[in-house]
Image (cartoon, rainbow, N blue to C red):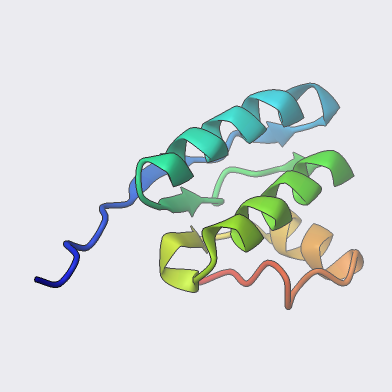
Length: 95
C-alpha cells in the first residue's frame, strides 16, 4: 500500500528575523518538519540575519525535497538577503 502523503504546516515568518529569533525559528522548523512539511510565508520579512538564513537553508536541506519545504510570497528584503549571500540555489522561493 503506498504511503499517505504528509501534510504541510503553514506559517508566516515574522518581520524581524534577527539573531535573537534564530533559536525560536530553528525549533519551529524542526517541529514543522517532524510533522510532515513546511510552507513558509515570507511576505512580512523586513530584515533577516545570517543565522536565520542558515537555519532556513539547513531546514531546506533536512526536508530533502522541495515539496516538504517551501517559501512563498517572499518579501523584497528576504529575496535580497538570499541573493546577497549567494543562497538562491540553496533556498529557492516561490512568488
